[in-house]
Structure formats: C-alpha cells, structure tokens
Image (cartoon, rainbow, N blue to C red; front, side, top):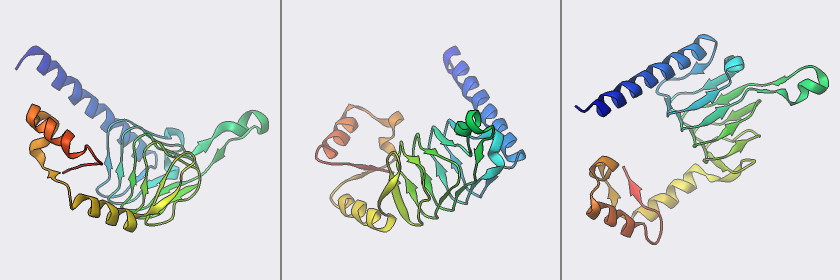
Length: 185
C-alpha cells in the first residue's frame, strides 16, 4: 500500500469516528433516531435543539441536509427565538442539500427532492420539491412512471460502479441516457 493510500485510509477512518461521535452526542442530547436510518455524509441537525428532532425507521438522509429546529429571526426584535419540532416519519427519503425548518412534520413514505426548503408539513406518501417545497406528485404515481421508463432501459449492475468503469462501460451508460434518464443498482 502506498503512503498516499495509507494516509487516505487513515483520514477517512478518523472522519468516520468524528461523525459517529458527533451523532452520538446529538442522540445523548435527545435526537431521536429510528432503526435502519441511513445518514449519508455531511449534515446539520440543530445541535442546540436536537431534542426536538425525530427521524423514523428506514429513512435515508442524503448529504448536506440541514434540520433546523429554531428560528432566531425574532430574537433582536422580541428578545426570544422561535422553536419547533421536526418529525420525519418512517420510510422517508430527504434529498441532498434540503433544509427543513422548525415545526414541520414529514409524513411516512415521502420523498423530499434535493435542494428543497421545507416550510410546510409534507403529507404521507407524497413527493415535494422546490423553494419553498411544494407537492409534485404521489409516491405511487412517481414509482409507476419510473417503472414504465425503466422497461425500455438497461438497469446497470455493480460492475458499472465508478471503480469498475472502463471506457466501454462509460460509453454504454452515456448512450443509454442519451434520450432520457438511466438506472443503476
């Protein structure tokens, strides 16, 4: 193993331990996490009000998600800050760089699109996106649409993951998505 590989491995190991320690600190201060919650990469879960945040079973939190359970905009004018619960129910997917504000409930089986700012409750089984987030469709309709598109597409397997790609596989993926989206496991 080269010195670069060793240092890189050590760096990522330390980063993982640092993130685990940070998350455990939030949990010790009241953050409620269900079973099988996947938190990918960087995130911000309001550390001073993490006890107001709950994430249900089987949720995925994509990178750069911010759960903010307080709003200090009133502090200068009124001398106090607004606070509110954030409840993410089971089986939700919260997309990359989403911001969820105080006093929000995201219903079970819902998807929040990347880059969204959630300012209102999200109904169950719903997809929302945008700033502010608005209802786009139901999860059921979305899944039907994706399944229909995938019928005429190759679904690329693990041999197409970044570490396994060669020029031939890259070209195959590019050709597959030339007219629309593609799919990979």
